[in-house]
Image (cartoon, rainbow, N blue to C red; front, side, top):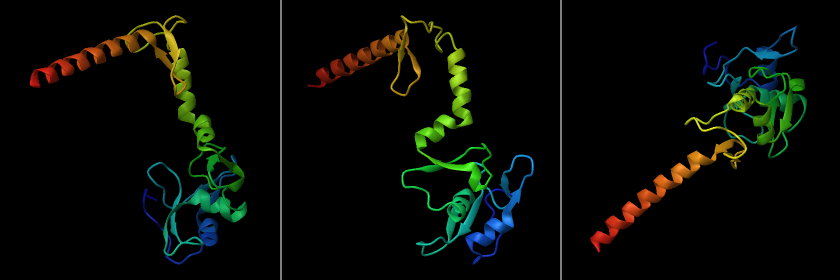
Length: 168
């Protein structure tokens, strides 16, 4: 099924949709969503949930979790423990904070490993104890690059200030 298409007839309940479009995969235990997928690869279904006035697109794994496990706690999102975005098996879903979901994500692990292997910054300065600081986002920063950026900024500001003085 092409991404973004909703194959079901309007009016079907969320329970029917899960029963119709969740295909059990015997090796992994995943229930693979055979309906429409969004651009990120998550199952998507156009349905009306309690409290909604009209149908709207909802991620299929959220519907599955709510049907089999209950409400998703406020402030939490569902993490696919199996790392398969089209999986709607409620046993493979766990409510976690956004930060935890990002920490567990595959891309984060790849980036973390990539940065750990780097011995120099993008400008060739060494990532050693004397030249490295920890940025607020948790990544390493190059002190020499930061000093150079500050020098450029100060020069730009002083040039602007001098230009403004000429206009007075």
